[in-house]
Length: 323
Image (cartoon, rainbow, N blue to C red; front, side, top):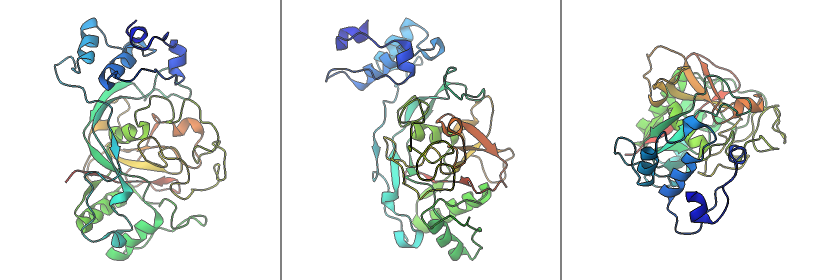
């Protein structure tokens, strides 16, 4: 009823919303009101405010505990990212290679009727703070600079991998060591993203299986069955497909990406935590790869590797905290 009063339109059916239908409003309707109405119109009961009071609190910008809900964030490619202390040439990585994401609250996981859904994808509300994320996965060219600087062998690239392809054959400890090296050289505070940060960035404010909609479509990403030039044959140069609404590339397919979180099937809070080098447990990896089927490159899809895992489909990108 509130949507009708504000927009003058009949609201979409639940099925239409689950397929990505957009709620349209006239100018002047605040983001807070739009967010509250969208939550109240979720297709599944468990996703909606559980009482009139909870809905009114959302309209007022408050959670049930009286804390303000963050609004949908704006992403900025340069905000709060200073130039690296050592100069971008030394790293192959500069300030413009990052996107700053304001923190926010989002629905993590997948609805029960999402095609390809797995049992470990329980939907739940999660709040993350502000952080920066690389626009692309780390490339062979970037990683080679690190290997030369610390006098270590570069992993053997697949025959089809060029300098602008994502680096693979890098285990979790290698990825963490690379983050530490970039931090020491640049003055940035680099790390792997948590699992929650990764999905938040991948979704970029969307709730569909892929950021562009509920279906894989054609040539939107590099996976087995995605269509296009690579289509499950090899990794592709980073940035070969359109960026998501927040300016991030290759969040679906190309390479699976390490996160800094330990895998927890039940989502008990580990998705919000970044663990240390010597912590026990398998590490979450996200995004699917060039030889993943479409169901395995969805925003909510989760898998894991032991920290010493390596393969020609597993890479990573860095996150960083504000300075």
